[in-house]
Length: 111
Image (tube, rainbow, N blue to C red):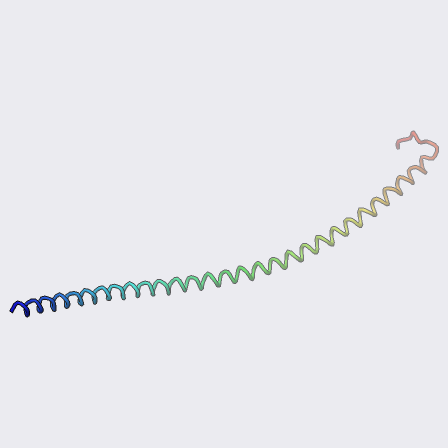
């Protein structure tokens, strides 16, 4: 009769092992559920960050366009100032010539 007692002990041990496995599986399932929930939260946050990045990208594109316009305006102003500088240089030469003519025979006159 020791055989049935041994078999009964083994069956009980197997039943305990199966119950332990079910408990572990339940714990794993709970952890997976928590991880799934957390991943869902992170997905929502990432979607928000993506939207923010898109808005920032659009704004940077707008600013880039404005800076290109400012650069073009500065270039036009630079060209205009170069033109004015040339005219002032011509006027300065003409004024020097007029002063020379007005001084006539008096080269030492510094008026």
